[in-house]
Amino acid sequence: MSKTIAIFNQKGGVGKTTININLSACLAKLNKKVLVIDIDPQGNTTSGLGIDKDEVEYSLYDCLIESVNAREAINNTYIKKLDIIASDVELSGAELEIAVKENRELILKNVIKQIKDDYDYIFIDCPPSLGILTINALAAVDSVIIPIQCEYYALVGVSQLIDTIKLIKKSINRNIKIEGVIMNMFDSRTILSKQVVEQVKEYFKNDVYKTLIPRNVRLAESPSYGLAITDFDAKSKGALAYKDLAKEFIKRQKRVIKGW
Image (cartoon, rainbow, N blue to C red; front, side):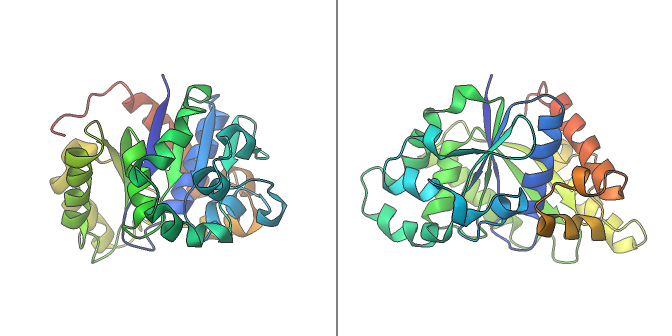
């Protein structure tokens, strides 16, 4: 059964795009059919998966604003079983155009309905804001993955994030759940990283993934080559962590998340 998941945290710099690219790539290599929707106008997921934005015939903008069918906007990536609906610069103006449309919060949901049954998982890379594009993403998904950076201010803004999800659940998408929390940029050499992980576990309990994504230079380099970390440096700590995360993700699909 298909599942649609938003990678969401309104705080910037927490690694949403890196998680989206590498988790999706690893799931595809585990024989899952995966679609990534890049709803961030910066288009970093698009370029990070080796797609030239200037060569894309139809982007997400065309689906949202011009009513182009989602199937026409799907691009194959270099990874078998991993597809993408790309973002480009036009998407930056979409918020104003969507604002005047009827049922504006549900436009992306209706786009996804056209192709949802074609995939095992659909991941949406959200921008670091709470604008209409992000609201569309949260209205369209079954669940949310929350990336949290292992830094001093990790929990700043988390209560606002949870309030946002609860508001969406109450007003637009009553079925939305927290899929899990990913601790990102973990440095095992520092006490601070370990303390942050413990704090987040106290807050989110069993929703926190056991797999910790390390701070890794190769992870930071791979998007500039348009490659997932498992193709850029398969033996790096980052690649090994994402392989473990993908396996844990699949294993956790049987777990019922309660309290939401």
